[in-house]
Image 1 (tube, rainbow, N blue to C red):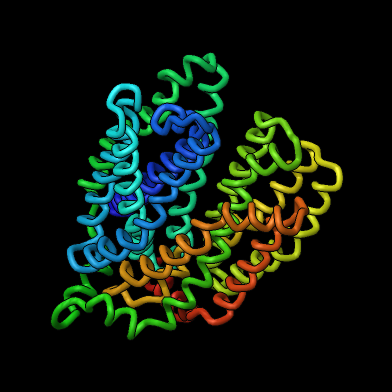
Image 2: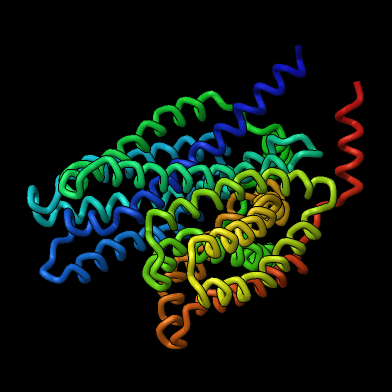
Amino acid sequence: MQTSSTGVSRTRQVVAAVIGNALEWYDFIVYGFLASIIARQFFPSEDEYASLLMALATFGVGFFMRPVGGILLGMYSDRKGRKAAMQMIIRLMTVSIALIAFAPNYAAIGMGAPLLIVVARMLQGFATGGEYASATAFLVESAPAHRKGLYGSWQLVGQCLAVFSGAGMVALFTHLLTPEALDSWGWRIPFMIGLLIGPVGLWIRKHMEEPEEFLEARKQAKGASPSLMQVIREHRRAILVSMGLACGATVSFYVVLVNMPTFAHKNLGLPLDRVLLVQMLAVALMTVIIPLSGALSDRLGRRPVLMAFTLAFFVMVYPLYVWVAAAPSIERLLVMQLLLCSAIGGFFGPAPTALAEQFPIEVRSTGVSVAYNVAVMVFGGFAPLIVTWLSKVLATPVAPSFYVLFACLLTLLGTYCMQEAPRAKRSVELNLEVKP
C-alpha cells in the first residue's frame, strides 16, 4: 500500500512539473505558426513583410525577458521553494495566453492592440525563464536516487508533446476553416484550447509536495541565501559548462524542429502540409526516445550518453542536409528528420538532470536559470536570424547545418568538462532503496 501511494505521489509530481512546460511550448509553437495572421490583426501595415517582421519582433521580446525571469524566479525558487515558484509561473503563463486569446485587434482599439501582445509576450518570456530550472530541479529532487535521469527527462517530454499538439492543432483548424474565418476569429481557438491547461495545471501544482531533498538542504543551510553575484562567482565554472551543454540542445531544437518546416517549404519547395506531417512523426519518435535515454543515463552515467548522441548528431547533420538539398523530396526529408530527431532525443534525455547535477541543491534553480536562459537567448533566440544570414551569405541550402555543427562543438566541450554524479553513490542509494 505504501509503494502504491508513493507511486501515485511521484506520478503527480511528474505531471505537476511537466504541465507548465507543455503550456509554455504550446503557446510558443502556436504563436510562431500563426505569426502571419497575428501580424495582419495586430500590426497592420501597407507592407505585409514589415507587418510580419513586427509580429516576429514581438515574438522575440520573450527571449530578452527570459534571463530576467530566470534569475528572479530561480532565486525565488531557491529561497521560497519549488512549489511556490512553479505556482507563480503557471499563473503568469495563463495570464499571458489569455491576453493573446482575447485581445481586441488593431481595428478595434488601435495602438492598444499591439501593446497587449507585447505585454503578453513579455509575461510569457518572464515566466518561461523560470520554468525550466524550477521544474527540472523539482523533478530531479523528487526522483528516487536511481531514477534521476529518467525523471529529469520528462521535462523535455513535455516540450515535445507541446510541439506535437501545437503543430497538430494549427494544422487542424487551418484545414477545417476557410482562410477568411481563420483570419477573422479561428486563429484564437488554438490559444483558447491552450488556456484550458492553465487552471488544471494550477490545481495540480497547488496539491504537489515539496521535494524532501530540497527541504533537507534548506534545513541544513546556514545564514541567508546566496546572492546572484555570489552564485555566479562561486559557481562560474558550472555555469559555463552548463551553457555549453545547453547550447547544442537549444540550437538543434530551433533549427531542426522549429525552423525546419519554414526552411523545407521556402528553400526546398516542399508542400507545407506534408512537411508538418513529417515534423510531427519525427517529434513523436523523439518523444519516445527521450525517457529511454534518460533511463539509460541512470545505468551508464550522463557523460557517455550525452557524448554518444551528440557525436552521432554531429556526424550526421551535414551529410543529411546535403543529401536532401541535392534532390528535395518528402521521403528524404522524413529520413533526415527521423535520424536527426533520434539523436536529439538521445541527448535531450539526460540533459536536464546533467544540468541540475552541476549545482548544489541550495543554488540549483538559480544556477541552472542563469546558464540555460543566457544560452537560449544568445544561441537559440538568434538562431533564425543567423541561419537566414548564413543561407544568404553562403548561398547554399545547407548553411543551417554549419551553425548546428558549431553549437555541437560547444556541447561536446561542455560534456567533456561537466561534473558527473558519482556512479558508486547512485548504486549504494539504489541498494538502500530496494531493500524491504
